[in-house]
Length: 539
Image (tube, one colour):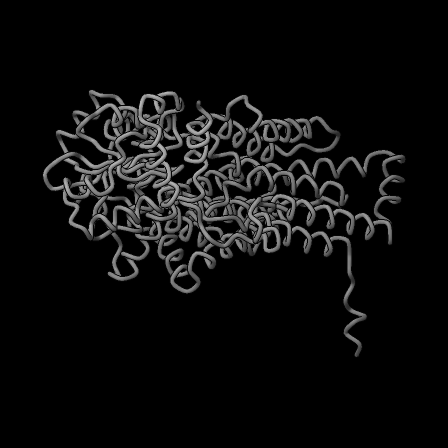
């Protein structure tokens, strides 16, 4: 039997393959998330101890206090992937899940017959691409589209599996598992096509599934604390999307999705509730934008496809667009567009990456600062380390257990007053209180915010000893640090300052010597080169 006769290269197969390559290539970008690192270290800790972490071990500020590790299973999986494949393995694992997520979106659309409308999925994916990072949210995105596909298509085997998947969700990204429960309850309440028995099974099974984790009902207490104490106002990803160019594609696609409900055709109440509910969540916090797009794009694609079934002219247009060779040609054209867009977005100015665009490394902003601190530890640096909120994750990965950090990417565990203070360390009264309470003798702060290091630059008892375009390291002028300060101190430069005019107050030779030393340590530093050009350009 000639198996070739059973294989047909349909337009749908062409587009599914193209979307897979598109999603994969779009997702192969450097590991840049701050939080990935403490998730990895938590996974390593649990992997090696064979026990779930219930108390903090990474910081000196809340050491020993209760820690709700509701992402424990995702953290262990990530570390297992890293252990087997390193950073490249993590990125490829993320890219593979991205393919499944995009395929899940396509599957959730019960009808999307026009190949043109598949561009809607690609557009949605491009908008949410940056949210697909090596964090437990990846599993939430995957489970969300799986739930949507099973519920929207009323696929009985899938529906029967949802309570089991809910248990997995509760352990992979426990707090976000509430999304799955809300989806199930929406269909249990509003979808009249489901039998009464199935509604009860889904609602009861998934409700019980959210509790089948080491933390049981405490995930709900965590959610209550998070919202009651106002943590969502302290982290950028929990803030509403702003009216700026960056969010313009999101607003346009949101309008397209909402307009789709004005098209002719039956409107399902469950679709309306899901789309409007997730849109409200996305407008309340930009972190929710990916979930909105994943659950709403299939609905819009399905409704636009319905236009092709309305009226004789539309039917004739459909027969022309979707007939035989024309469908394959159009699918092939879209496939080429997807692939071209993928490689275009992967472009980079680095010469070697023009030939090899896949970026399987990482670009953590405080990587070199962590290396410097590690080096200083070897030279006898003592005392506690203060660190910027964003930097805690990588410092944990690089320095723990030899050194504990001040703060990392967790929120509820630290408490709202502490997080607020940690983010306002540039206020003199806040710094004085923190320094008095925690007695730190070294500090790693960011060099990409609005001169957050201005306070340390103004203090004679804190000395800059390392800097690059992303981070700065200061040591306190105490007896134990004298040798390190004498060896590494920058006595002139204030790299965080946006104004270079102060450099003219010092001898030109002295300034250039410090800039040359900075460039020797960080040759790619754009700021150091600009400062040097400024000084050399003065008469």
